[in-house]
Length: 131
Image 1 (cartoon, one colour):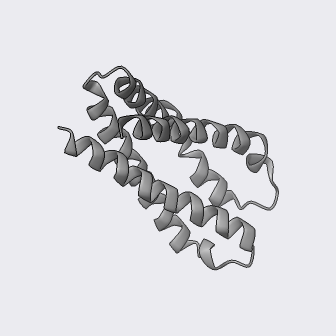
Image 2 (tube, helix red, strand yellow):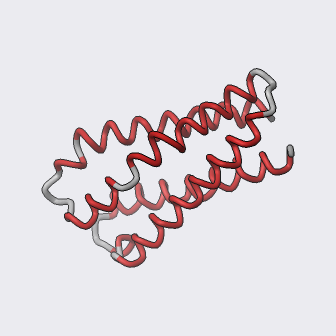
């Protein structure tokens, strides 16, 4: 199970970095995106790059090398992912993002939200059960 969690953490951390590269290259310059959306999304860059992704990678490293510090980073990273999910979900409800006509974008947003909801809780709970 440790290997699976570590692989999921590496995948999640890598996905965050890949998303931000894509966002800064494409989304950030998309004229169809509202200023409110862009300002909101940009507020996630620092927490994702400088806390969530490093927590995921550090936890995975600890799991691979059988060092107990992984527990702290799994719980911290998972709780950060869950917190950011709640912010994103709240924003999407307020902005009625889920009900817009752009079905492909809605599906992607819903998928990202579900992955964050599930992964955040998984990493927290797995860490807590190993305390």
